[in-house]
Image (tube, rainbow, N blue to C red):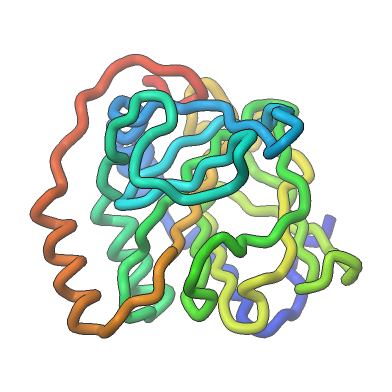
Length: 237
């Protein structure tokens, strides 16, 4: 496995972008997210085969997968409640790294336990492919595999360690990507081990930068702290 990502236009890798203290603070905020929106196991459309990861979301919209298909929706599939807000530090990271005019509308939280993986796929359920994808890795190192826009394009794997930030934009926005496996014991961030991946996405096409600013202000006003409780998946104390 190469330690360097392939040279691909629009691919930006920021190794160790989040220091340990920032990672710990973010994990604490994710505990609040999971307290409000518990982790669930999605299933594949039509077949109902369960994913090997468990997931949740935060933001105005959340990505879900079930027998009916892939989609974004405003509520948790099990509780029926709205998703909690995206932590402010992630919104700030989006602004700093992407430079995109509008805020993200969804933050997918994937938890990888030992043996979990994610097959090659494209993120194409969004309206706005001009907006980048921003990924944050926390916990054990993941073997990330990146290909091209065509599924038959050559792929290359490289590690994503805790604190790494990856952006796919421009020509790489629709590149196929996935996680071959995680490397257990490579991080002490999560007391129970495992890997968390956060993917920030803009789902709809913003009408204007003015509207984007208004949406950001409204999101800040609606943000409320979550209630902490014990939960599984390596996000517990």
